[in-house]
Image (tube, rainbow, N blue to C red; front, side, top):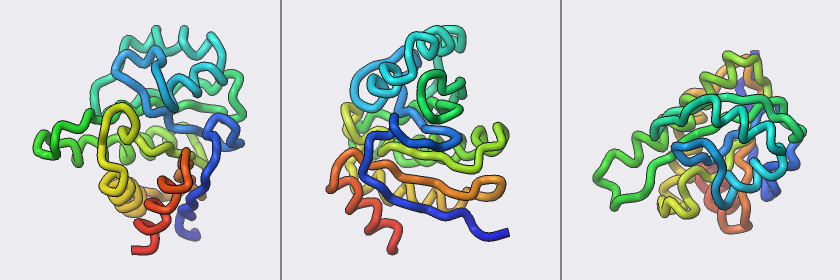
Length: 168
């Protein structure tokens, strides 16, 4: 079987036609700002109801719901760490988000998964450090049935950081 393909795109993650999009969620799973709010708005009210039924999620953990009004069949909600200076286990918690999302995606039979830059918005995780963790973790953990992992970046700078990490 061929290795899992890793790609970087600059796009709106809510528009991607993939098996699963990963949501940079907060622990309530009930929506928020940034990517989380955009995914909740695009997926419609049924996503909020499905998330409420899950009862929250711990940092570094993930939960899966249907994609509802998204092109994506599933939303994998990953709760990334809030940056506290780098000495509170943030790197491991962020890597756990990426790894756990891959496991849940594989269990759901997903072949294509798109990730945002988890924890790099309001949670303040340094973008270059986060990109390196994302690429390294996914490269090491991605396996069939996954065929493609997309790092969906919200800006040209985010895309550049991910492309640089992918090249190393």
